[in-house]
Image 1 (tube, helix red, strand yellow):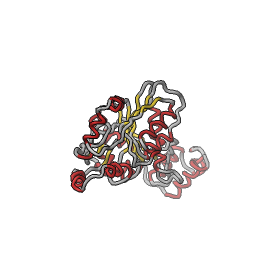
Image 2 (tube, rainbow, N blue to C red; image 1 turned 120 degrees about the vertical axis):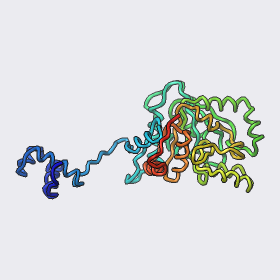
Image 3 (cartoon, rainbow, N blue to C red; image 1 turned 45 degrees about the horizontal axis):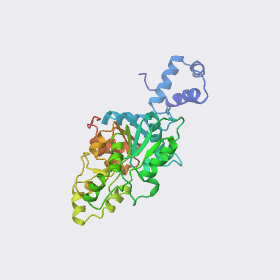
Length: 327
């Protein structure tokens, strides 16, 4: 490494090269030095921070964070949306765009695609525009509907809308997501139409799931819909849930939380979800970090689509020494 040079000279060389598009030979003649010395000066200008090279990815992705998440957690695919300092860009929309691109990259003829619900998946669906037709693609639900969440983000509405956009078939799970008792849930599970719909979901080739936070949004609505007693709520929270996917709650290590809540949900289990070849978690916002990290630690998700701030929060919470394999 050559000795540091005068910043003013380095600045002059940098301006001639980067702003005025002068060749290194021309700069050498102007500054009274050799061409090889100009090359060293430009390198030194970068080292001192006089020149900063910025690459703007037209796809709006942060590849270094994607690589770090992929390596740390053994993920199949990672898409991290660049959202910092982008005027007018909503974080959910940026994440939804990346999730839609991943969906189209992975989509093949005769695939079955399963979905949960939520705002993140709504953004994905609305960002999906297929450039060619896929044959015999089927959209299915991972979990029943929930009347207490807004209709436009329910599983049925998202499955129908995405099927229209892809020119695909779709099958509804005609049942509520939560029941007043495990007995009612079990009675519905005995119905052939419900059994067939859940079998379709379990046999999916790929699943897209939102990652919930138990104290907010649809995850909180699920708990409210159960009308739990004080004792039941205390029991549930004693297990320290950090997130849910498809209405199945888990702790910081990704272990399922059993009990009264799990027993009243009509949908595939976390164990069923683990059998789907590629489960894609889609989430935005730092508040989702505990839920995303729990899902990663429990190997619930194989691929991840998120925003830059959430990616950094997850990596920071995981610590530099944490490594986890995929399914």
